[in-house]
Picture 1 (cartoon, rainbow, N blue to C red):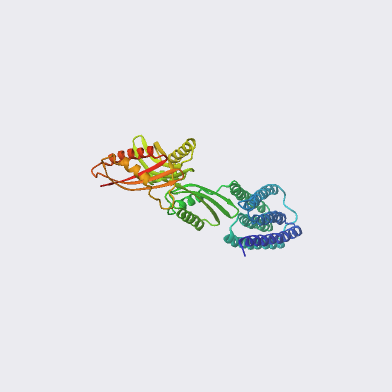
Picture 2: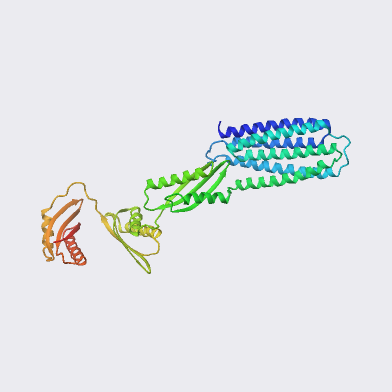
Length: 452
């Protein structure tokens, strides 16, 4: 038997017991002239109406989610409980009003007797049975509808006890004792009903206990791999609790690692919060991640970027200065390339704190073909004639050339005097590359320097 069947069966049994108590109290109350029993039977009728409402709403609440109720129909059960609380408040006010009126009335001519006492005892036994049935169902399923009916049964015990005490006091000669007890009971019922109305009204406005939100936040923050708990949003729908959690994960985490951490967050919440439905959103955080890694990662994700290299940064009093080389499609217009550059700057500034300036070197991207390149003697001779003019170059190694559409890709191995500084070698290499590009149209030249 599923949880919903347990709920509805408990409410059905409760409704049957209430109706039986109503019949017994009404007929014996009229027969024995016991106004207390007749009043309590009217209370039983109102309770049966409330229970019927709760039974219907509990059935509606069990309907699966649809296009208009994506969180399910659990709020219908809460709404029924809210209405039930209002009805209880009306009953309580009726008790108070009726008790005050009866305190001012003269002694009745016909007084109730043993039959009235027997009817009250029967009703008390019925209420006790209802309390036991509903308590077991609440432990298994929870749910506001069962709790409302449990409150009804509990209050019925109080009201019937007041009626019984009143009947006993009347038989002993103190006929006003019944009315005083009814007045006290009415005040207690009013207080309980107001609490019930407030609790369900808060639930209808998606309020959840602050302690529950704190518990979920602590669970999320304590899950291994979670850098920060960004937000926790919760709401209740019937007996289900929905939680939407946003967490920050280290930016270097792989998708597989992020999924595993999110699954652990969901599991930990479900293990601690009963009937919880959890959704976890994750986003990267770059705290404690090297700046060059962040720059490379966020720039590579920008649409239009074909490659990133030579990422460098320096930190000064004025902030962080970042430099990087970005390759884009060689056919891209300057305007489009500039938009790509602006987007890269925006993404870096969002991910790196205190950025002062970003320098982006745009370069045309040339894809390397999978076929093995061949040596071009004509180009090799032109390259060699240029390099021989530089005495600092001790040896010209292999010259690899290949053509991609109208572009010549030239890779050159050169040996330099080992005593030269890196800066000196870089200046010589840049000058040689520039001269080769001027002589060979559409050439992309890369010189690989090494010590002689």
